Amino acid sequence: MSHPHPELGPPPPLVEHGLRVTPLGGLGEIGRNMTVLEHRGRLLVVDCGVLFPEDHQPGVDLILPDFDSLRSRLDDIVAVVLTHGHEDHIGGVPYLLRERGDIPLVGSRLTLALVDAKLREHRLKETARHVVTEGDRQTVGPFDCEFVAVNHSIPDALAVCVRTDAGTLLHTGDFKMDQLPLDRRLTDLRGFARLGEEGVDLFLVDSTNAEVPGFTVSERDIAPVLDRVFASSRRRVIVACFASHVHRVQQVMDAAVRHGRRVAYVGRSMVRNMGVARDLGYLTVPAGVLVDGRDLAGHPPEDLVLISTGSQGEPMSALSRIAHRTHEQVHLEEGDTVVLASSLVPGNENAVYRVINGLTRSGARVVHKGNALVHVSGHASAGELLYAYNIVQARNVMPVHGEARHLKANADLAIATGVPADRVVRAEDGMVVDLVDGMATVVGKVDCGYVFVDGASVGDITESELKDRRILGEEGFVSVIAVIDSNTGKVVNGPEITARGFADDPSVFDDLRPRLVDALSAAVAEGVDDTHQLQQVIRRVTGRWVSGAHRRRPMIIPVVLEA
Image: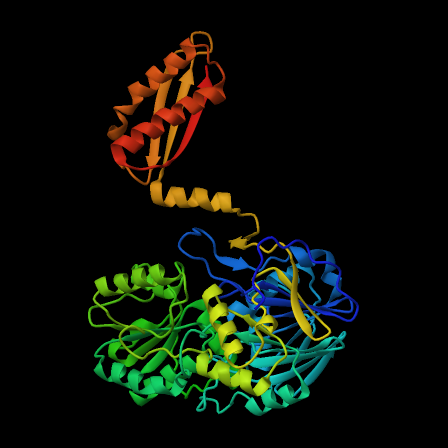
């Protein structure tokens, strides 16, 4: 098996007849999926998504793939192929189009409609669009793309087969093999088998559920659980899910109709995406069921179902604001029921449990995956992945979309079906894989770090700044200002001490002030007259005192002024 190599250098030039595959996101985390294919001097991008921040990344709104390796070659990009409309696959598109605004986009009708809505929010012009559906073939530069139907937790998902002179690549995108999908659109296993018979040289396979045995449960299995929740709820029901999970919203909508309730969307992205889905016919909303989320006071709570964003505990999402009682329209009351109809994305556990605790303290009954079948995964489990390997019988396999443990489990499944271990490529973000003469090999690595988005700022936040933010959030800060007579060296004003985050009463520093005066006087007496060195004296004395008195390590900001 080809293992990741931490000492890989820059990749060599690609041989003329080779196909290069470079994942810039999605291999090592759940999210920001992006893969770049190179052949005959041209680039094809498959997906361009975002990753949502974790607790240790305060103030970060989104995390993007690193476009640095593409910046000198933006004109070589012939298209971006989008497998489906989830944020972790399309959320980065507006940021890529800021780099070059006329890159053509290829995807299904719903996927491109969701992208268009995002581009309008970003005030970007629509670029060339090629709407495709299963069975279509689209040639872009030296890449001949064929699209294959797959089912997922959003309609219109596609796998993509890319034929080149160097060989054929098949990318599953996110997929599962639900045999009773809500939209009756099955994963095209016959299409997978046909491509396998033709010959697949490199198979890129979704790894998200590779550790889960058996087959993923059908989306329809949620319906009876929703019915029981609705039947037992005497007041308002709030259901939180991903804003692009059209199938889940349809299930909630159908349950609301069965139980005589009306529905309101809560959260800007939910309103936007479900409007798009309804307009295109992917979401069925009976007449008179939908009510305006700004007009909830006019409806009895027992007649309402709210469908909300925020199932991952995102700090600014609708559900988080509801849990923390800061939402303008929705105020929880005793007896309300909240359903978290989603999985726990790794890294979000603490944020989700904080929201659950906040909802519970408000008197709500909280139903989630841990206590009821209110979520079904959109990804193939191990049994389905084995099935896919057996019918495609690819010459080389490269697990994608997942953390290291998911990629390893997926690689083991491929080997179990007979793929030779040296034909299974275990890559990570930034690793460069070349397909040459039927063999896929890791040949190098490009820089591929996290790019943080903070409001309008993209890429300006460093890991060092995040560390400072974590210290501020967890330990607080102390500011000390002292004015020293430039002639005598004596402290003539201050020290003035301001603190945030660990002590609200300013009198707690009464014991620190004389220590600072003594330390500064002693330093001056020893000949220290540089303000920077005197600031370091303040930092050391303050740090020792706070650590001993409060067991904290705050950020300390010393300022020495001369009078």
